[in-house]
Image (cartoon, rainbow, N blue to C red; front, top):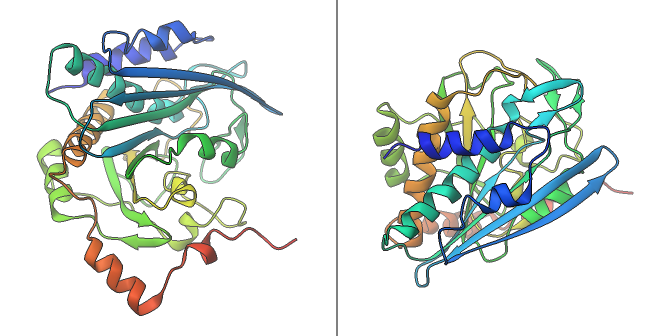
Length: 306
């Protein structure tokens, strides 16, 4: 099942100097089980439209899909949709496809919680190896809203192209982060990746410094797994990747080849998780780690001393 039509519909909405709430609402209006809420947030570097779409089909489990990004545009300095928009595109395309499936009477179960934010005028910050997109608001303000306490697992989607450590066209997945532990994905998750991409699974080489809070002054690959700090549920990153190093602020680089399989992967994982036919990590191994070494969340999520 291609996601291209859903992705193109979302791109047509987001690739604009101004995105209106009614346009986003139109993506899911056909599904009576969908609810949507908006919050316009203002910070020192501008404003963004926080968006939460919840599908509640009853039964099953709850999963969160977060579209992580700094912004979909960097106007007035850069015109057009930027590379960093990928997370929002995939998240909203998932919402559009769920609404379409709902309207056709598919037997969906569980709760899907899709969150992202839409900023068409985000700042650009200097970074190596390439400039990166900033956000109108601080990361913690956004994460507190993006992470819904009802989600029993979270898929965090983010453009991950401005680096030199994961260079492949398409998408990659991160290990699962749960309360600070970096855990291996299940074999079933890796199989689904292979089915979707038609190649062996590729994992992002997440390090300890990638999961500590952004307030820790070390290099982070990006904020893809930062949602773990605000939940006890497992978090897996779905990284939109590229063979070359691409700035988050670059325009003209939105790649359907990468976005389509990433969105299909997210939807397949979400459907199976909510219907209780898939686990994304090995709970027994996690319990063994806790038994041998204890909990690490309070250590890793600790803020700098005053």
